[in-house]
Length: 241
Ligand code: IPE
Ligand code: IPE
Ligand code: MG
Image 1: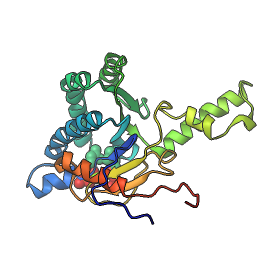
Image 2 (image 1 turned 60 degrees about the horizontal axis):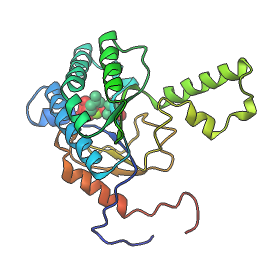
Image 3 (image 1 turned 30 degrees about the vertical axis):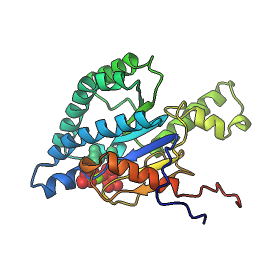
Image 4 (image 1 turned 90 degrees about the horizontal axis):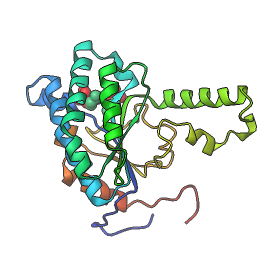
């Protein structure tokens, strides 16, 4: 593999983050899990602002998975309360940084007040031309592929499309946010080395960076470390270089 200088810092075009370890951070600090989620919002603000400043074009943050619906109702309620607080309080930060908000995920299980606020924030930031920020909420990678398959099947059944027209581009066009490029870099915090049903279609050639710190501790210096790690990778896409 090509050796590169240690200080190689490359800003990826597209970044995805599995924000993990809020509960562990809180436990270590002798606090309730929800305090970890609360502190996680500060890390979201830092990462969003720093990615926008550095010129990342697309950032997807995994905020609530399809499987997270199996958590205790009290934790779910508090997580959505925090999401509503984030959408209300951080709108000015999004506007100031030219960030355009999007949602990746299923809408059917989200409460109407959450959907309203999400839709209003998406609309309020729709004219921003800087970084796209998609919040993956009620998101599952397998569910996204199922939904795309259903939409394509419906088009074939209605005669709008032929089965042989289904190719990679057609599947991409039926993902939740087709305007987002595939992630170049996938970051996961809290040391876990798994995908947990995140962007299964899109990560096929993403570089993976695992940070050992829990999400509430993830600051600009950890993001920079991830970009340096990314800068040292040789991306081959199956070819011989
Ligand atoms: C990530 O932190 C946030 C969500 C999944 C909503 P966790 O809540 O998973 O924290 P740990 O993994 O239990 O430490
Ligand atoms: C993945 O973290 C989901 C989010 C970060 C929103 P989890 O904590 O839910 O994943 P597992 O259970 O450790 O795989
Ligand atoms: Mg976790």
